Image (cartoon, rainbow, N blue to C red; front, side, top):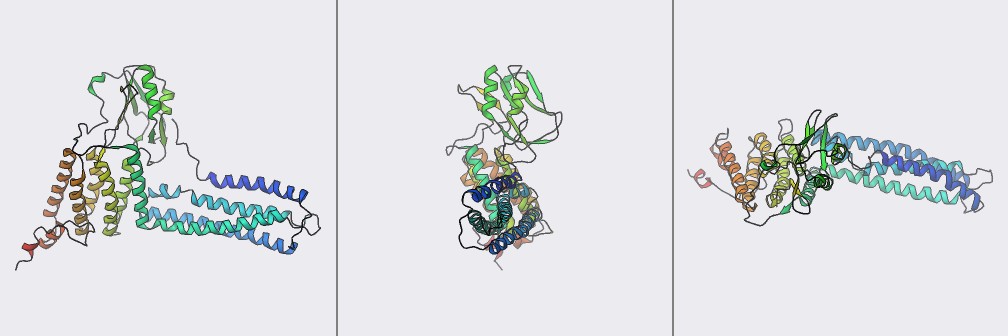
Length: 432
């Protein structure tokens, strides 16, 4: 089964190292052979001091880069969500910076070895210039790496997750016309007229996460035999030994190796073809902030800002993308996709449960649901949102709040505790 085709981040410094070794073995030799007699006024002692200082300083700076990298990963794991380690830890910036430091260190040693090599007082001019340029680039890279730490600020973390979610929604769904009611809210179900399955594929191997489907390859396979491929697992699901990965309807003999190559697996979930993953991470941050150990409802409110934006986009999108047709319009591939209810459950249930003692979170939830009910495009989706509003009202009614807190909790407030949009029962509360 095919893995995600991407360059592992740890290989980036190795590429820099290979380029440095190649340059260190070739450029000084060419320099010595063709422009070895060129002098530019720099003494050998000064050159040796320069190259020695740069090479030794880069070693210390490389240690700082590693320390910053570990701090970034540890901070993400403890402050926000362990799953964010994959998002920020796979950022190639730190590995490129490390590679630049390795290049500066390595080439400085190469230039040092060719300084006054024949005891004629010569200094390699081109290598000296390259070392100085690499030193400047290293300082700029260090400044950019330090600036990268601002990405760990909670507002930037939430914004970045929101951007990833918006990107996958735009790539996956199409908007639907206002007022058009969705006829299909369960696109992953196999249509009843397909008949019995004629072939099935059993997964064998260690647990893996489905990260992406190659729709074009699956359609070609199904079209070649007139079959319909029904995938049992959705993107983001973990498949384990003995699981029925997919079923074939209408044909037999589809090559299992090609079917397996069309389903991409990884060790962790990714954002590609997985609209729920960005919401999952935002909810993780919100419920962690609502834990008694942290007790930071404002962070949960900020997470709800991004969640509401993603839900508004989903509420205006045609979610029935789990059915793929060929060029003739014949159904060829079926796979599970979340329904509107699934998105609502993921986005609100855990935050509502963990934030039931927070007036701030309740007010922000109410504002999100009230405005979401006005922006969704279908009546069925609107009814589900209104059902969540009623559930939120019941939660307030049965909460441990006193009468005044219940009145406050029933107000809509996009800031949680900032500006009330609805003053239900407030006049009654102010009566003597």
